Structures are given as C-alpha cells and as structure tokens.
Image (cartoon, rainbow, N blue to C red):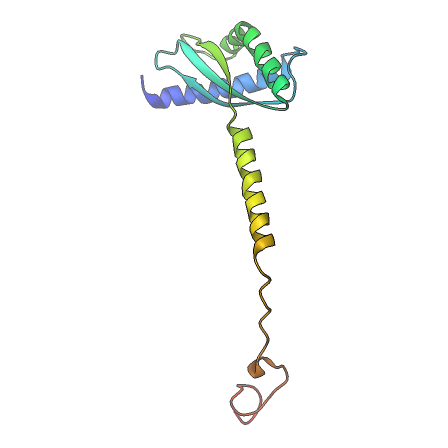
Length: 147
C-alpha cells in the first residue's frame, strides 16, 4: 500500500476524530483543551496510534486520556460511518507532550535571554559627530550651494 494513501487516511482520521471529540463526546472526564496532534496508521490499516495533546494539569490529561480510551469503540464506529474504508483501524490513544515540551523550551529561552540582558552592561549611545549635525551647509557636506 502506498505511503501517500496512508498519509491521506491519517489526515482524514485526525480530522474526523477532532470533530467527533469536540462535538459528540460528552464525557465529564474530558477536561482542558484537547487536540489531535497526529495519527499514525499501520500500512495494513489494522491499528492507528492517535496522539492527543491536552492543555491542562496532569490530572486533567490523565482523565481525558482515560475518557478517550473508553470511548475508542464509539469513535471507531462513528468514523467508520463517516468515511469509506475497507478496514477501520483499532484506535489507540496516547498522550503527546510535544506542545508542553515546546512551551517549556520557549519559557526557558526567554528566561535565559532576560538573564543575559540583565547581566550585559549598558552600551553607551553613539554620539553624532559633526557630519551628523542638521542644517549645516557648505563645502564638503553635500548640502546647499558651494559644494
């Protein structure tokens, strides 16, 4: 099976699952902002790893993951009703912490930049020389008559 087809199926599954989770699932354990970041389907279309990012505390991440795992059968059935595919893969939900890691890295970079800025001595401002004076005309300045 071509990898291009698997990529298209991955994109379609990600899109459909995102919509279903946002509109159809009413589980109270779903907390925080939930995003499907990636879907990796095996080439035989039997299994799909669904990576989810949950913005919130660790307890919210774990409860949301548990809710998604318990709703995997329902979601699989609903997606199979929406798309035409010979084999609807089993859905395996996994937490994707890449967004949190990226946010942490950005905060650390900002902190380092602020510390560097605080340690760096203030640079003296450059003073304008005679050529920088305004209104001066005459020979050699390129302004006015006589030049």
